[in-house]
Image 1: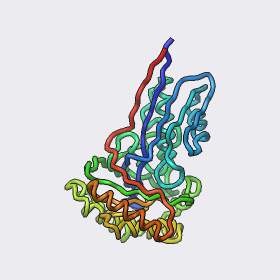
Image 2: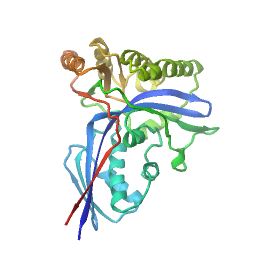
Image 3: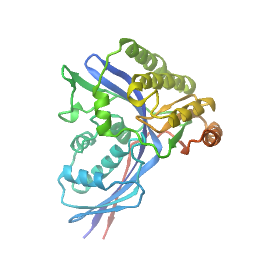
Image 4: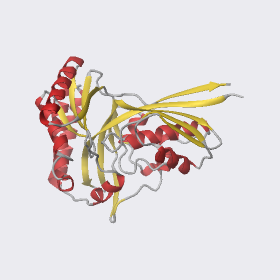
Length: 329
């Protein structure tokens, strides 16, 4: 009798802030993009009970069990070969759970769409960027969250999860320098909930965000103009950081991230910011040679200012996750 194994590979996303905070019946319209690493790789086979094999340094057991529980499945053999670091602003939980969930749905022939799957396993309730990065890759604007008189609406069905409003592949020559300060964690979902629910409407901020994204960022992307895209990106990040400053003690989550963002800009990045709640900082540059030069600058700068960090170059990921089915006797 043949046995089937499903291998799934995906990778991290950068959350670039919001194009709107609160306006016209919606809140937190997100922007983001998929990057080539860190990666998540899982291998899943059907089994009578749950067997988890974790080959990473990342804690993943709770998420595997939660996905199994929500899909109401009897068992599986789940091997996690690679995982994205937790609570650093790279969207680790969504990529891990969707990877495991999709593999299980193929093995058990559940026939859920990725959107339906995300709703069942409780992903995408805050932002649709992670789901879209998994499913499509590229640069994404989501549809934001619905607002009622009582505040932000929790999704009651898959159609209410923030979906893709705009998606475009990023130029192949673009590179991002990613810097993850060690020993610092960003807010988790429980911690971010009261922050996001404390909505304030600021018409001037909304106008600045809308103008920057619609009149500068998106046209620059369409022209493949990295410099002006980066300039607009930096402005959005600063505006959003200023809005959340009372919750995170400044425009950034910590002084280490602020140092990394400033160093990226000083070193020649066209744009830079904090991904999600941090501490990951990132900067945009064009071309492999410039990226290597900026990486060298950042390694020296981090040592100089005393920020112990993991710093590396990534490319945009303009494609969906990969799925491979392996059959054996």
